[in-house]
Amino acid sequence: MRHRTAGPSGSPMLNREDIEEREVHVLSRLALKARDNSGRRVPEEPDALRTCFQRDRDRILHSAAFRRLQQKTQVFHAAEGDHFRTRLTHTLEVAQMARSACTSLGLNSDIAEAVALAHDLGHPPLGHAGERTLHARMQDHGGFQHNAQGLRVLDSLEETYAGRDGLNLCRETRLCLLKSRIPEGFPIADDLPRRTTPYLEGQLVDLCDRAAYLCHDMDDAMRSGLVDWEAFAALALPKEALARVRQRSPSLASDTTPSTSRTIRRETVGAMVTVLVRDLVVATDSVLENAHELREPNDVSATPSYLATHSTLRRTQISELLATLRQDLYRHPEVLRTMEQASEGIDALFDRFTANPTAMPDRFERRIYREGLERTVCDYIAGMTDRYVERSLAAGI
Image (cartoon, rainbow, N blue to C red; front, top):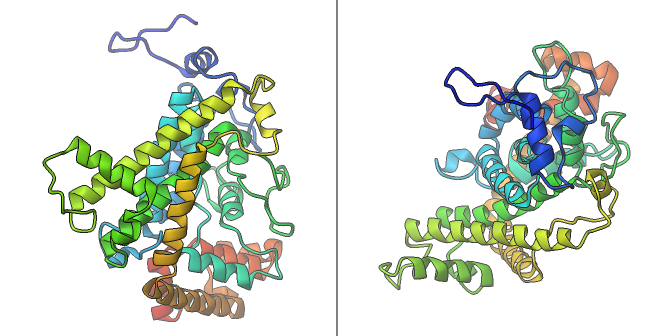
């Protein structure tokens, strides 16, 4: 290790080179290392204190697109209650889970955090209804996919102080966000493949994302009153989590349930998250212990499928929980009614802006000549918040 200079407090001060060298000595051979990054689309001088992945994280965190997540629906509209999750709170929960999992596995938690913070930036307003409606309207123009749209936000749509399009992130960060095939015809940067296997850090973010939204959608479903605990009581994972809570806190009344007690609901959901993250770490570690043929991160991206995984038992339990949420929450009449209204609103805005492009801000109007009218309108609507959609519809903008 390099000799470290003492900072003003007398403690050793770590600069970028120190952090990069420490990564080489501490992280797994399959972990992404900042000093081995493939660079940015537009070359930049390195920062004195932060690694390239830390800079990516900070750029995402300070972006306008990230701030807009606080006004984008996860399942329940933010106006329905102060404690329902939004895209922003979900994103922060995924980032915490992914960072913990990567730290335990000796992977690069900085890039995992950056990817987690960016993973929902491509979601349009009004939840899944917004995505389905935009995809239908863009069917003849390359379609719409939130994962691919997130890359457009990062590479092109987000404005920066430097006066160039996009955040100019490291190639590794962008590749970690390619968790599904990008359809032909959907416009992305020409230096990205349409399909690849993400590095391990990206795989863990993807699996933490799924675990987070399943556990937290269950929480919000009970909080809303649309779904009672009885819908989940017989499922193995929630049942086990509740048993752990009761064992840890024997003073809890035996007749209380996560539907009737906020404390028990919170503790049960927290126990489910803990179980799934621990299982993800243990099961993935078991796979990596036997992956002797993989010597470095690019070997991971060359494999046809994920190495990160849950155990067979937990995968079965995750599938059970997803099936119940689909049946009792995502297809609940009240949720479907809200989605129908959301689709009608997105449709109306799409019609309005394609008929009158000058109603869009100047920077979007200028993009029409490069991107085409429909794609530009789609980009504009996808970047809106729920509240902005409602205000636009009410004002007839």
